[in-house]
Length: 326
Image (cartoon, rainbow, N blue to C red):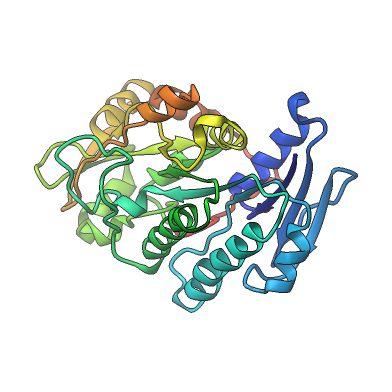
């Protein structure tokens, strides 16, 4: 196997590279990392190609002899980059892949933004057959376009593509900072957009945890997934026969329930809940298809996610990195 990875320097890419190169099952796998602004260290099994994903000559050089592609690269809410990187870059990658006689499978890491995340209401758990209904913003739009492009290349050219659709990907202490009322809050939505200033100030002054409530007034249920489970799903999808031309939801077995989260934190730390009314909708990504066809199941549940996030201690050489606004 010869694997091309885009986004190798990102949150998922770094974990994937270390897992892949350490896995005895991939001892013979050669890896090409297509890097632009940041890079990784080359080894005897890892070659780096520098340049833009939207440059056909750069992509062609990276694609030579590649059997599988893992497309992890993305830009978030950056309208000035969305078309050139996400749309043109996807097209250039697909064109180079279908022209490559060694090509076997193209795996795209997508997101639940393509089905609207907490912005769109669903009457039942969200499956892979539900229509794409993106939430506002260019990032969600480009993920829909990428998914459709890969799907159409299957119809048009018989290309073997697989989509893994993940929600907010957690690592290290991400969850702790996602739930922080301080200026160090990670991701979104920002509490200042949802709470009166005096309520937010009071929450910051004590030991409190947020309980977002959905449009019906119930504690919001929102999907998360740990990066370890994303990596295991990606490595499974690389060559699993049942992944051919399929889309899979990849998430925790149950969404994070803000009410359950507050109860756990109350027992652990004595934190008191702060209700935050929102217009968001609770949703539930159904991952049973991945379990049935791939044998993939998440290993990190809510209790484990909390334990890891609150136990994690950062070293001086391990600064917090906000990979994207959230």
